[in-house]
Image (tube, rainbow, N blue to C red; front, side):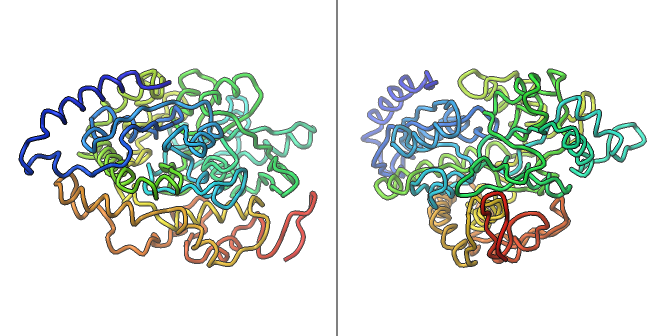
Length: 466
């Protein structure tokens, strides 16, 4: 749905700029970038982590950069990506795997880049009430009767084994084949010795050798699909885990913060052609989004309830404010009444969240290789080259430098001397206790107990090679 306020704001801003055309150079408008394209349409999916777009629009940060923006909710991730590729959308809130997969030609072929990472964390894995009751005997419990967290997939394995013994498929939902949700759900399952299945060049179901059968369900449809019994669990972003709690149809068992502390999530994606044809516009977009991210996290999340009110509107996420607030304001509710403090469930600015790290890109590529979406062995240098072709910290830092000069952000908020790689993630921050170093992708892939290794390939229903 197009944002209905766009035309009014364009007229108002146009009048303001005309009125200030003769103002001396000390005016804020004098520092505005000479954008090559000022009328823009951005796409998003109805999830709370689209917040930087909504905030940049509602607080006038796009306007400050001379941009007349329309925000449009999209039906699903495929439609969103296709419309960016065709130019119907100028850019979009994207799954981090989408620019990478498109650039290497998995699913579709187009060179998509990102100068801005939208957030850290923000996802959860939910199971139906029936499955939760079957998991309970395998859980470690606290004195208050609530389970010890994080809940490990080893508690789900006896349930999956029971389904297999009875000849019943154990179906689970994720939002897209190259989504963080797919990889996080697979990571969690594999850490509990549940095989989530391989992809191959001839079978893109992702269910080869699978113990749990994962398939695509659009985020807003997750709760109803669970309630219908079509799937027994899912991995999705908010507010669709908390919605299951409010409806009484399921239990979120783990957040992605517990799977990998401060893991990268969405990105803002544009075609490479757009960034080359409209470099100043790209900088202006990035500036506005950085400011929005800062507002979302500043003063210990003091602005989150205002953000919740904005996101609850039908043109954005369109879920009840109470549901969105359940995770957006520093808490997360598992079973009904079991609400726990998770202050970093949604991170938009802290921990250099908005910097597009090459190491984040490399992790997604390792998971594509692990499960056969990248069918053949690639050297470490390939992962680095792909990451650099898609993630654009140079654009990001140029936008950040301008914001520092303008007094909108602090210099210490940005990793100016970074080589583009985060420090290795320690084993203690990951559910399976295996550390991650983005500079050694193949060593990392080989350290994971389930998945393709070395020069293995999927041939038919078998893994061959070494």
